[in-house]
Image 1 (tube, rainbow, N blue to C red):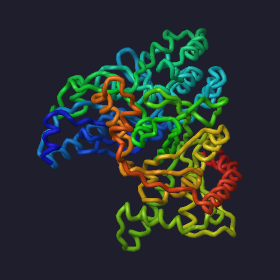
Image 2 (image 1 turned 60 degrees about the vertical axis):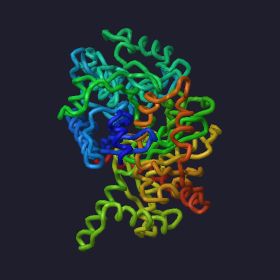
Image 3 (image 1 turned 90 degrees about the vertical axis):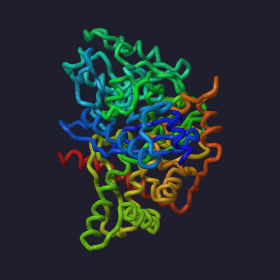
Length: 530
C-alpha cells in the first residue's frame, strides 16, 4: 500500500477510460501495468426514431460517475486524493456517426455501430472504393445521410466517433488513433493515414452535390500509437471531475476503439495473433501477414493501434439475448424463494450448457437484437426454434444460446480459413468468458482453434487503453508497441488454454447447419413483427 501511495504522489500512475456498450469503466494502473484502482458506470443504448443511440449528456454523466468512483476507490484504499496522473487514454465503441457544426453543436443523433440503416450507402461505397465498407462505418453513415438528403450535412464541420468526441472535449484536439480511424475510413498502413486514392474517389463522388467541404476537411487527424495527442485542458478537467480535484496539463495518447484496446489487452497486435471480444457484440481481430486475395463483404479491414492490417469479423449481437434469458431464470429462482447472486446464476446456467447434447438436441436460437449483415438479415428479432421431437432440456437450451452467440463469427471466420490465414491462437476477453472454461471451451471447438484467456482478461478494454497511454508515456526511443507489450507487460503473463474437442466441433457444425437452414424464418420474423 505504501508503494502505491508513493506512486500516486509522484504521478506515476496511468488512467485508461473506455465507453463500452453497457458500461463506462476507468482503470488506474501502476508502473508494473497492473490495476491499482477502478470505477464504473452502467448505461444502455436507446432505440429512438428507429435508431440505436446514446444521448451525449449521458456520456458525461457516466464519465463523471466512473471517474468519481475511481477517485473514491483511491481515497478508500490509499488515503490519497487523486489530482494528477502521468497519462490518460480514452477509448470507446468503434464506428458510428457524430457530426458537429463550426460552433461545436451536435447536428444529428449519435448513430452507433448497431445501426444497419446504411444498406444503400455501404454497398455503393464498397464498389466505388473496391474495399469493404461495412454498414456501421462512419463513412457509410455520412454517405447515407447525403443520399437521404438530410439537411444537416451541409453544416458539418467535424465528424468523429465516440472516443474522438470525448478526447476532443477533454483536450481540444480533433484526432483519432489509427485503429479507431480505420473504422471511419480505409487506412493506408504504409503512411498511417487515410488512403489518399480512396479519399480522392469519395471527393469526386460528391463533386456535384454542392457540399462546402472535402472529406479530409471534416475527419479527425490520424495519430499512431505512442504519439502525443494533446493535454487535459482546464475545461476538460472540470468536465471529467466537476469537484475540481483533477488538474489540467496531463498528456493524452491517441483515442482508440474498443476493438483495438481488446487487441492490446490480449497482446494480439503481432501477425499470426488474434483475439475475440465477446460481450454485447462479438468480433474477432486477426493480424494478417499478407493481404486477402479479394474483397469480402463479411470481413472488415481495419488496423492495430500501430497501423498493421487486421481482418475483423463482426457480429452485432453476442450476449444480449442470452443475458435476457438469464434474467428470466433469475426471476424464477427469486419467485421460488431461493437466493443466488448474479455471478452464481450465470455460472449455474453456463456450466449446465456443458452437459447438453453436442448439437444442442436440435434446438436453434437467433440472438439478433439488430440486423446481421453477414447473415443477410436486415433487422433484429430474437427467435427460438425447434422441431416437436427436439430435445428441449435446460442444458440444450443454454448450449443453443451460447452457440448462437458464436454462429455469425464462425461464418466469417470460415472465409479467413479458406484464405489460409495463419493463426496460432486466439485470446478471448469479455463477458462471455467470465464463467471459467465454458465460453472458452465451446468457442475453441466452434472456431477450431485454441482459445486462451489471460488472468487480466477481466479488466478488458479500459486496461488496454491504459496500456496504450503507458506506452506513450514510458516507451524508449524506437521501441515498438509490439515489443513494449511483449517485453514489459506480458512477459510473465499466465494464460489458460482450451483446445478444440472433436465431439463439440461436430456438434457445433450440426447446430450451424440447422441455424443456416432457419435464416429465412428469422427474416420472416423481421418482416412480420414490425
